[in-house]
Every structure is written in C-alpha cells, then in structure tokens.
Amino acid sequence: MSGFEFSQTAPSLETLRLRVTDRTAGAYVAFEGWVRDHNEGQQVLRLEYEAYEELGLREGERIIAEAAERYGVTRARCLHRLGELEIGDLAVWVGVSSAHRDEAFKACRYIIDEVKHRVPIWKKEHYVDGDSGWVNCERCAEKGSGSLLSGSGGSGFSRDSAAKNRG
Image (cartoon, rainbow, N blue to C red; front, side):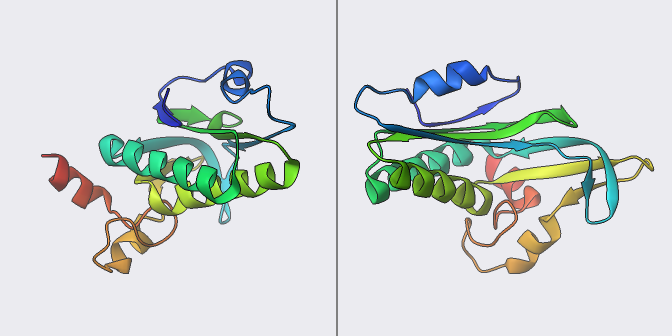
C-alpha cells in the first residue's frame, strides 16, 4: 500500500484514518486542507488541481519515507485531490500515527509542508467575477534554479515543463 496518492473523488475520512491505524501507536494526528472562498482579496468560486502524476507520486513517496525515518512514526499517508473542487471540499489530507504525539505532530507538519514545496501540483482558482488564474505558477517559473523540485507554492516545476517532460 502506497503512502502518497492522488484522487479525483472525495475520500472517506474514516477509511483514510483506518489506513494509519496501528496497535503500537499511541497517537494519531491528521491535517485536512479545505477549499476556502477567498485568496489574496479575491472571492473564490471553486478550484481546479492538476499534477504531473508520475513524478508527483514518486516525490510524495519520498516525503512519506523521509518523515517516517526522521520522526520514527508508525504509519503515514497523504492524499491530494485532483480535478474540480468546490468551496468546503477536502483538497489534501495527511495522517500520521506514532507511539507518541510529538512525533506524530512533527511528521504531519513536515509532510504537508514538503508536499506543498516539492510535489508538482498546480492550483487554478475560479473567481466569482468570472476571472480565473493559476496560483503561484509565475513564482515557480521565475525560480529557474535548475532543480525540478525547488521553489515554493506547489513546486519549482512549471506546468509547461511538465507537459514537455510527459510528451
């Protein structure tokens, strides 16, 4: 069973929680990221997520493995939604179980922060006024550090470079 996955459909939170349940764990921590109705002064109507899935799955697995090694957690998982999402929908979920709470909290925070920075996922916001725009893609393209996975706001990997690498 993989630790990182993408999904086009809303998951069952109970099913996700059960995937990190372990009899040796005394703590469970989860993070849920939801679609909100605003960003940087704009009223948001809905979001659209795209990803370079092959690379994203590999990098997501690396992040999960790093968290397990760094914090000694029992189990860790992350699911990121793709496709169109409405206000209030779950966009990302991270769950961690460990012997103690401190490790679980730290690992959960590490996973979500690293996913946001390293996994090639792009977010398009659709606004109430009819406009739309890809969030943070300009900053990703400006980074230009030569690393596919550097930068912030989703990844250092532009949507255009991902399309070229896929085809």
